[in-house]
Length: 395
Image 1 (cartoon, rainbow, N blue to C red):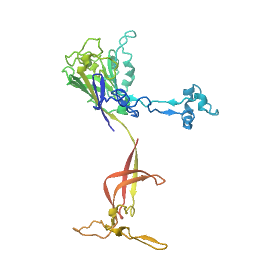
Image 2: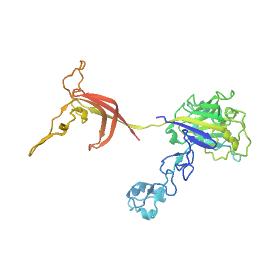
Image 3: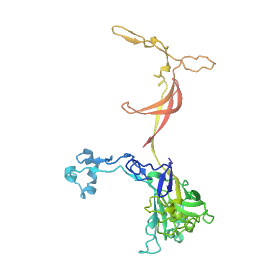
Image 4: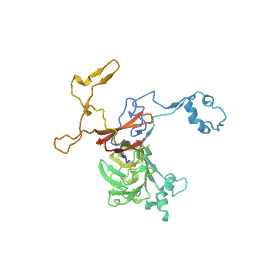
């Protein structure tokens, strides 16, 4: 599966899939998470005070089974299997609690070199250098020759992190599209059209268009734009905007400023309201599936409880019956002959014919687990057999 996501960043707010950040009665977001964040559980909707939360009581039997193997982490000492376990004596009567107000969203970090330590290297961003080496086979910018990879982390780096809750196993190659807007006008676009991790500017200033302005780590969900790369530091327009807060001087739009305001913790200047950004990509999610074959053998499944299967006249005789001192019998009902004939308006010899439109899946105790709706009814006669292939997604 390849779910598609769209993030729009404007005025230091993030909008996911063009959804508005709706305020609630008690918070900025009615889902109980910060605006621009995805609520992982969506349990505490527009609530205040008493929130729903997970908990485990010390005396619960499941509590004992769940944590018996992890006592070294919980108590700081190993647990001898011969010693009896008593949750109350180890943890008292406290109840272990958690929180359902979990959320996720994209975040942007502008990483600068630390001048007080070793010069000529960005220590914070260089931690992903080993991860970049895993992409050397597809991304020529990460080649080890001539210190190409080292040169990417010698100056400022603009990094955007995407949590895996959005893309699953990895971001699908060739689906990333980044758009840079000034006052609502598109000034630049970057895509991974080569599907090798390089973000190529496909629209923008002539000197930047066609150049590699950034890189993407598909499995880690990281986009980064190194300022040591001249295309990422080249001005895209002549509009002056303060991208790094209120005190620094205004600057022109550049790829190293892309995504400003995406939960970066910076109080941006009023001039930054003219800049906006969009990030669009598709994720890759793998699902385990169970394949089942359901057989309709010859001579079976040729009776139906559908009222149209019987030839019943709409009268009081439908429910007639006969009874005696020791017997009871319903009135015999004739079945409808739906066997097709080769002649126009002709009637063929009677044959039991049914049309299978649903398949039921049962367990070993004949309990119905699920029903499967077929795309169309399938004709079933006594002298033929059918096999239905069913795929069930294991969530």
